[in-house]
Image 1 (cartoon, rainbow, N blue to C red):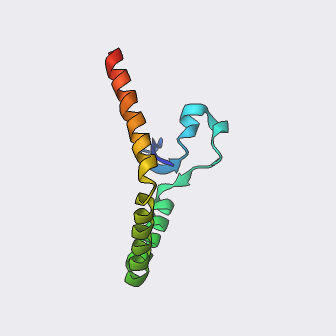
Image 2: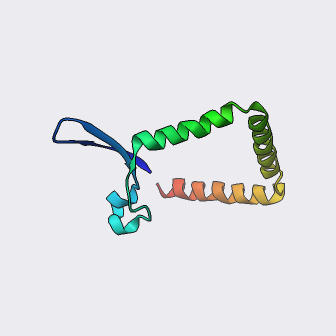
Image 3: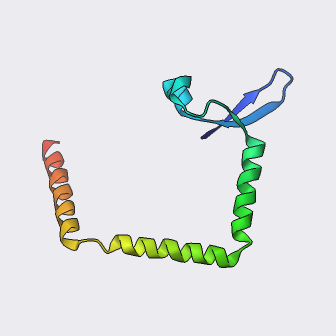
Length: 99
């Protein structure tokens, strides 16, 4: 979703969110067929954030889970990662040589 602003004929401004695909690819490209009032979206978002921040135990548990997931991501196969990085470096060298 992306934020938008419209000026009304009475001089008031209207703030809302809509799918950015509508601008790029037309109205049929977006699955969200409606606009959302910014006031309602932002209030709902703030309620969710506030609920997370006011429960420190849940926040701590969720952060620990995220940290553990990131640690597990780093424990990949070092040989495979070395091959991937070697291939990327070779590609960069080929591009540099072409320039």
